Image (tube, one colour):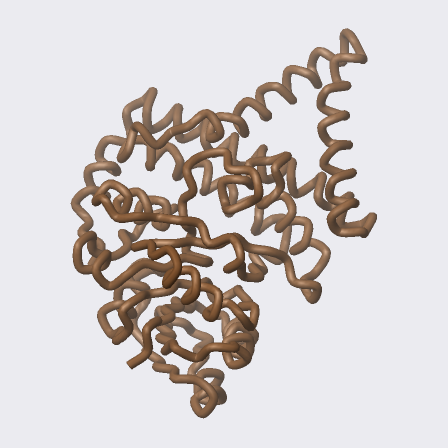
Length: 331
């Protein structure tokens, strides 16, 4: 019986699943099974799973479309391992990942862990720029396992694991935006230990276009208010920074029409993003794109945050949604 059960929800991503399974087939430790849960896809990946059936202990399930959280819970119900690990279908896993995680858990066990993400050399320039903006200390990237922690570490489901005991005690994921933050919060509140295993990183492709990235990050900002209504003590100063960026940038742009030097702080900040990205990626195009993706990351989140604050808190429209989420049992 494998120690780890890897649970992967999938929706219309056969090509990404192939890359993910290929990386899993090259691990230095194979003490894991894979549960691939197809969430009502119209482009199923069954044939891809079959291609790797002789290389991996893989179990393919097809179910009606109910959302990624329900798909993960379905996988946990079918799992046989003692420790569940979650990847998104757009991840590629370094070959020593499971060897590192098992050694770290043997050395310093935690009921729940998470790891950071990086950009693989094969990723597109936009993907690398998005990865930079989502992990840089110059944005709010530190909260996702970067070198500078801006809040208490919260595992995300692109690279997250917890024990069977956690599942049996806390339940599964609830179908909502930012369901991984909700799950991590419930795990911590239940008294289980959570830690960051920094060497256990994954390559995360994220979105493939600026439009999709903007939409995703806007939803993240909206969902932060939903999380605040569920857990008021989880809202930190770092979550206010994107909104401050939006309001501050707007104020500097307006003031620059009357005093040109008012725009300088914003320009220096964008220049710093460019310089650090250039140093990290050694590529002028990626550095330039990083400025754009960082503005989208902060601006999209900030706008979503402020809109949700106005609608759900000031106008009181978040009460029914919050109560509905609380009634979901994560089954």
